[in-house]
Image (cartoon, rainbow, N blue to C red; front, side, top):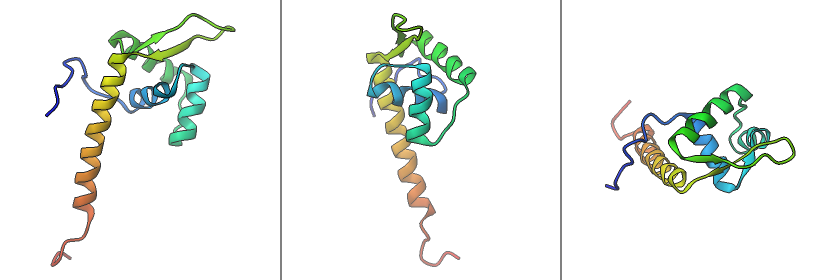
Length: 109
């Protein structure tokens, strides 16, 4: 099994959505909210997003960039990409187990 980051901690859905959004490229908050809704169907409130941004920045998984046109863009860091890759691998294992278990078995009613 791959080495796990010691600070991965509890991974939240919002953190996952933010990292997936930023993995595509730098974005400011409003654009992240739009992007996340487009690819996941999840609508985030600004307070929820900015709380997640603060926690991700504290972990070093994202970084704030200089303000541009009154908006602060964010960028995923190499550590954030590694954390995202680990979380996605975990989700793939969960999906595989769930898909296998949800299939009907012979003789089970």
